[in-house]
Length: 175
Image (cartoon, rainbow, N blue to C red; front, side, top):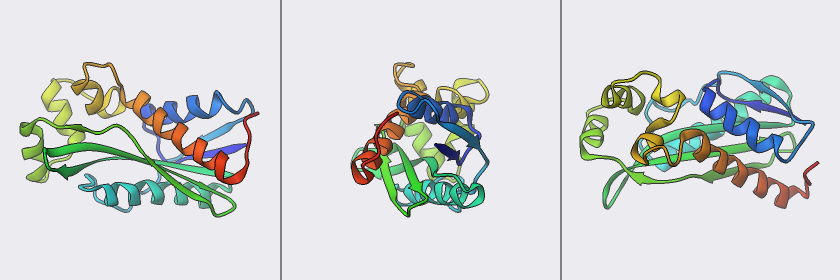
């Protein structure tokens, strides 16, 4: 089974590889930088889903793989302020398109205010933590859950939700 990954972000790539590898021993992966065709900082569930789908469709088309996976992180407004949202998409060569969402937590007001001013979450998190590359490591979810849930773990959960729905829809079994 050849799986095309629509990102080269290490946290996302590792999540996808771990999820598929625990179910499919013969899984082969190709990680490419895919365009989301949405804003750098998606500001709604709809935009975040669209970005994940665009990444999955793009890598599926460009690689001829059996499966394309796109993962997208964003933020969304809620009654309690701005929340972190994460979506994934699985697109297969038979035309199936599946989405799944991940953990959602409120962001601190100081981060939310900066996002509303037009800043992107990744660089904001680097400034907030006084470190670099947070989006490629634990992510905002890791920072704000005291590393109990990392970005990789959160996205692995999303990928397992995608695989499970795909198996159910197509009758695919683990190898």
